[in-house]
Length: 383
Ligand code: ADP
Ligand code: MG
Image 1: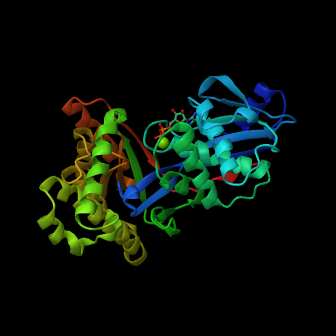
Image 2: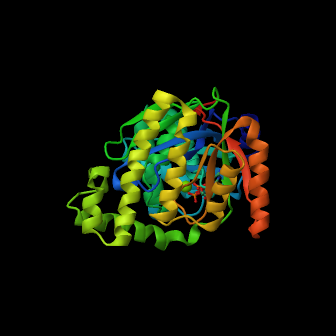
Image 3: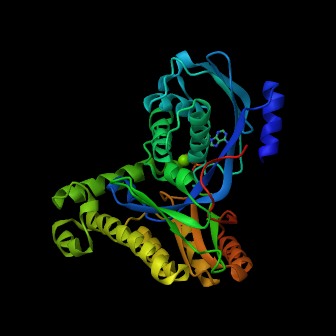
């Protein structure tokens, strides 16, 4: 893809880029809705990337173009505030603005031109947004000579998404995209923001992770997210905790006594999901990847029954994949649609794909899109 982006940059801007940078999308292996409860998540960067060709200009003009959009967007550095940003360019331009909040002097840095291409599916829950933010953040940190470390670049991407795009997301996606390593996951503590790269060993064990994108849109889910968040806050308050992170499985009997049934089940999901993330990391270290399958299954059951964020298509994807030989499967992402993952022995991938597709036909659901992903290196300079 770097050759294509180089050629596209050349034809769009009539010169060669100063460099090419890329950053991957991510999938969350386990740890759902735990981020805003200051808990644990465990995503990995995937082998789908967003590539940015970029060159500084002599003046204060920024021009960004993407293979996804017909029009190049132009803005002066003097006008670069979140209120002026909208549409797809709010992602790259928001990053440029956010770098100003992390040490870049936007009154002296040069403008730039950038061309962006990507093979991260957009809106499939694989965080094409973090991929574009992380690639642009790394590119500008290099070109502007900022030398920011990757944890800081993750916060830059998050700030861009929160303020310029207006999406109240956590730091998981950018952390995975910037800190990911081949065949490894990024274990992240959302309270301390400490992270650790944990080898997955999927490749050596002959395991593939299948993404089953149900193509059920989760855009209508805003109310569902807000009410889950409110339940978590109410549950923590009723338990005398500043966040659900402070509670463990030992607190479940007291939670059952104190909370109403629905709040209790929401709280139980968060408490047990945090434990499952810790158990996944420990199991990988002590027993290898095949043994995490039961934790994936338990995570799905918890989201389906306790947190109630699954949909029939996701449940069917998980059941059909398991029935055809996947070791473990769960919905991934915020819920109410989106994708499921299935940890599958490589030899059984065709069977699992066929079984899931057939199950969707039998239920009259729209055909899912199924493909495999591999844990890949995080953001990097390509040229
Ligand atoms: P996702 O789950 O893929 O992160 P989001 O809604 O968070 O979905 O982000 C997708 C949005 O990010 C797109 O609608 C677009 O505005 C922007 N985006 C992502 N990748 C690109 C790209 N390569 N070129 C232009 N815009 C992109
Ligand atoms: Mg996103």
